[in-house]
Image (cartoon, rainbow, N blue to C red; front, top):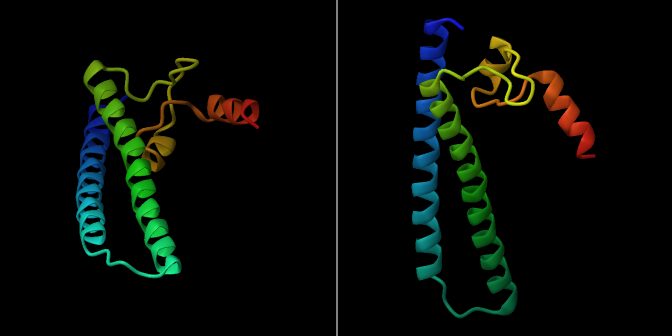
Length: 118
């Protein structure tokens, strides 16, 4: 794999990682603010507040999973294994990595895993 492409992907991964960190930080501020401003209300309003809180936490959980995938991709870059399928060892096409820079499986292995998980 070309060094220029790997550097391009590394910059993209670092930018995505920073975006997630910013989102998580903002979500946590919103969550803390929402919890501190909660007044005794009727049960419908309390249920709505709980739903909002759960949605914020779910977003953070999803972002954390993506963050971990990005960290793993950066580690693979440092180890010289970036762009190789973790299952079959074949090269992951550049187009797939541009779409999903933290992809660990080639298209064939990804499809195979998705079929098994149905």
